[in-house]
Length: 142
Ligand code: CMP
Image (cartoon, rainbow, N blue to C red; front, side, top):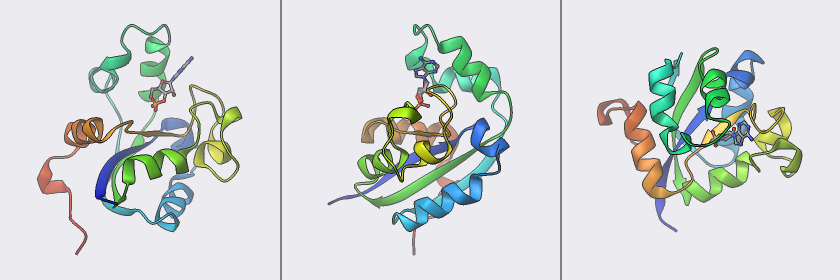
């Protein structure tokens, strides 16, 4: 299985609940290396750009409002099969439908406030990582 990188965002709801450490611990337990990490308050423009693919969705305004209401923690994660493995650890988009033991089951409230974001494909992971981190801010695992 190829070593991949994916982008994780710990969303405002989870940061507000002080679950950053708990979520990072779950990720390290699941075999991910954290290659880059930062806390940032997204501007409306940055959030709209990041979620541009959802622009036509009825929930777009709500999504941008939520993602800009307080800081997020953005991370680059690495392990074999990282995109699929991280999606499995996150759980279903709707926390009510997420499997036991997943991040969204543990910390998500509803489909909007669902604790974490993860890239949905390797191509999007590359785009999303570059959106937040210049190559100089990503420290490869020694
Ligand atoms: P995320 O992985 O960050 O990518 C897009 C986000 O849109 C998704 O997680 C959800 O949190 C959010 N989303 C999806 N459906 C809805 C909805 N019906 N109402 C509000 N937010 C939604």
